Image (cartoon, rainbow, N blue to C red; front, side, top):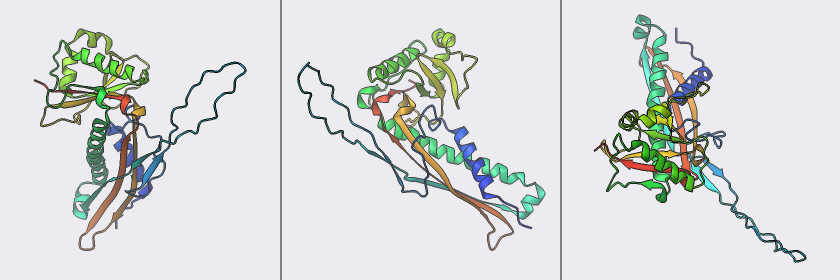
Length: 283
């Protein structure tokens, strides 16, 4: 007897597991407001925006200028990433273990997809940071210490202030070693405690210098150096994803069940000045 399989139930499980695991793709780091319905890789999402409106000075008893024609600064978000999983469970293994082996395999599939999507998103955000909002460089990265790691967060905050980035909801994603430096600074230890009413986000480890601090091993880096520590607000980056198809089938020449699924996604930095980046090395 083949394993009973309900595609809609499994698809919902996969999406939930993937979203819970994301750091860069969660709602307080990137936004999903343009997600809509994605049917296949290669689709695009058109994001319209209105250009700046000019302000004139009114003079009593004089005609005002003719109305200006507003410009449409549309941007295109391409869903250009398509990843799949395809695994098989032999009937003998299923009988000797139990049906939960499929649940575990689905969780592992979600974790693997998470790594791909999270790394992709981190790279998109790194590449999209406005050049004027960067501290350090690949050629000459900063080398934070326990005495000044906190101050680098303050500097990132100043860059965002000067770019008119909203204050509420700012984040910064740091590697484990940078978080370790913060833990050695009394300023972080004393200010980093969460309020009792705060719901923690994935990977969140504290609050400091106006940021929610998130820790991730997917911070972009070059061979364990030149880490791109990204700070900003979720208005900066749009992320869209969809699990398009998920099916069970029985390979013709095997006794057992296989499951395959397709995950498509894309991302775009819409407001580069709402991101800031610290390029730093351990030593």
